[in-house]
Length: 252
Image (cartoon, rainbow, N blue to C red; front, side, top):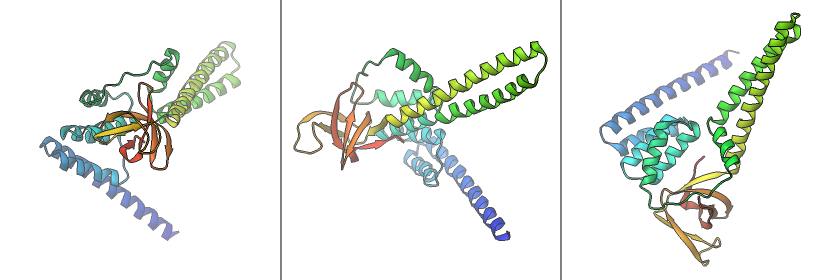
């Protein structure tokens, strides 16, 4: 028993030290960024990632630092990672837009079904965990309200509790549905950023095949299929082609 307590104590101590170190690295990174030492700031921020910690604030500051040294691919990559954790952050969206405006490639987005786009926009308003968290909260509220409805003997109060419990159940279904919908969207759509200065898209996964078109670093693409060292990519206008897998980095 004493050994177990000692192990728990040591683990909690290590966790506390790690958290303290990460905060030190983060503040050091901010100081270096404000001094214009952007590469040094990046090194400090990346120490936090090496310690296993991830946050939208960390990715946001990494995106800003890479933008300052004109590394568009990494800048956009980390802004996109920040948005996965906090989809509605206006600062991230704004700075991502600045980075995207500097890209060589300007691709028109393929038109999508307006109904699907509407439902997807709702699902993208919160993260998966946020949708599920609020769904569970409404489920517990429903359970409590239904309990009051079931055991209440007064007709008027019983009617009010029934109406409220029905509303809470509807909210539970709404939040869980959107959480599942967002999960399915993220599972089925794997996005990535091109990291090559210029990359040729080919008709087949080999160098002997014809070149269809080429794109440049920083462009966001969708991964459709992977075969050995090649990846089939779809771009926003719907065109597809094979590129070397090492040319992209997935936004996970």
